[in-house]
Length: 254
Image (cartoon, rainbow, N blue to C red; front, top):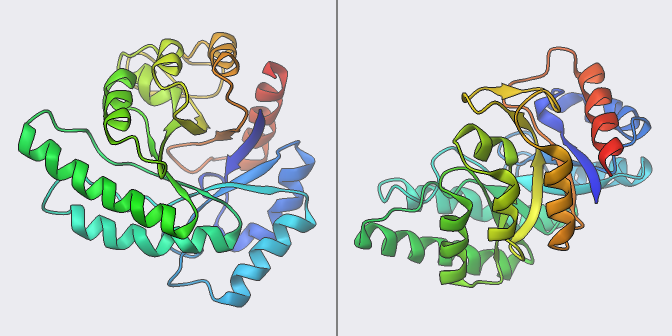
């Protein structure tokens, strides 16, 4: 497994070139970038794309994934089409930036048959567009149980779809993040390394209720060899120190 960091959770966009050497020196293998604003298809020119790729390559870093999350997902029929049109340009753009993994939140899969059917249709369209762009779309865990998400992904059984596994989201909502890995075996494409308390709050890595040694062992058991990408829900107060701690914590587990 490799370790990464979601850049914009720790630093502002305009510090990318400055901070990448620091990220590498801390032992990270890659970064994830939001492509909804500064690094998005509406903002980054062809030259800008080359600059990002060159900066990553110069520092020996991979682009673990992009994040194309515009906050509304595909579950609400009133906003699903809007989300699809916002996400679509990010797919080919992510491929140009150097990754074939795009993370987002689909939203909670509805139980009501007609609403579920509508979500199946629009997620299938998004997946078709992902495949056409040469990427896969990975939805973040936590809106429903791992077994329910697995059932949805298995129902669609689309090569353009996968899961972005976040043990914190699951732990904070009362699901077992270790057992959930088995439910989603073969569907986990990328992960977020984030901790949380069963009471619902985010916590620093290793200081919450995620059972990290057991979780890493579960990922290993299902053959996951991708990224553990450090994520925060709020901008880090002391980014370099928190990133250093996170890298050391994860490397000690691997």
